[in-house]
Image (cartoon, rainbow, N blue to C red; front, side, top):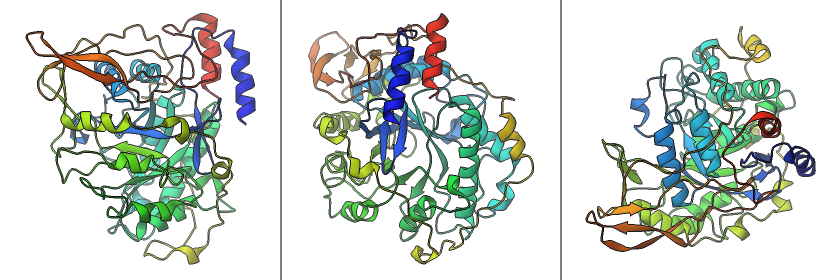
Length: 479
């Protein structure tokens, strides 16, 4: 598969020489894999939902404001991440500018298809009532809006729907939604995009949920999850691999047949957060069992998990948690972490066996039939009140907002660095960003992300997608 992607990439390269983008990722066994280089892709990310769910009104979202996206992408690129998770999205909003900005920064997007609005998610109390065409129009609308961006790494079918209060049949309906998502992508997208689930760290439901969603059903193979996210906050302060229970998580997921990663992490019971868990997550004990982590969360909200504070005038203050997390990222050796591992990619999903379920979730693997109207949406595509996305030119790299460090000093030099074709953002130790007091006196330098990565082609710097080159680029991005 990797070889075929490389051949197609080479074929379009001459036509699309002005088109820079990350390479799409796919799932092989328990790893995310770069479809061009064959390298393992490890998630180094942040949960990104400025304003929180309460700010979402259904017509705009965090990926529809170009100026904010440019500011935040530059800051997140400086932090050293390669992935964001966005929870609430409006299919009708135009996401081209923001998706293109994050793409240029070498940052992927994992996107939730659900919404906090009415009919926007499965009702865990009565999933058979909420599994309907109104809900699935929201799900398909998000897919339609983001399917053409090469940095769309995956879609979450649900977030913490299965918990202690869930009725027994919730997992069956999650598999039904995932079946429909896979079928919609197969019919309406020019490339396969992974679909997965984000789970709460509730024992013993957690391991059973992962098994239930990952095993193979002979009559519904496309309903299984491609990946599994874990929302866990068990490592607090200067905990250890064993005291936090990370050793148990590693054992639980060592042999599972899909990529597993922390979709939320970063306990704030001890402040400031020192993020010592980063060394464990990407270290030898865990990095073969898990595929990285998304830290909760980018902006400071009422729950006090922010890495930055977005001020009322649009300026941003980098909180001490930001600096601590950046320091941890800068210690990592990503060359060894992302190396291809054939034993990981060759793991196969087991056949579903009810005897493997030990908790109170369902032992039935009957996936509900589609309700009337959903087949038609899959066949025809959902384009009403949907802005179907495509990459656009990224011509602006300088942010207009002021950035401060946690001491109140002005941070100078943070701007978007448009990466070479196929490059992914990585942590680094180059010193290009300076902090100065409001009077202009320098107070020293701090490390920035050099933002380089290995791709199928190098030395191609982009800020335009026009004419025949753009069409060839879109043809490649869709693979």
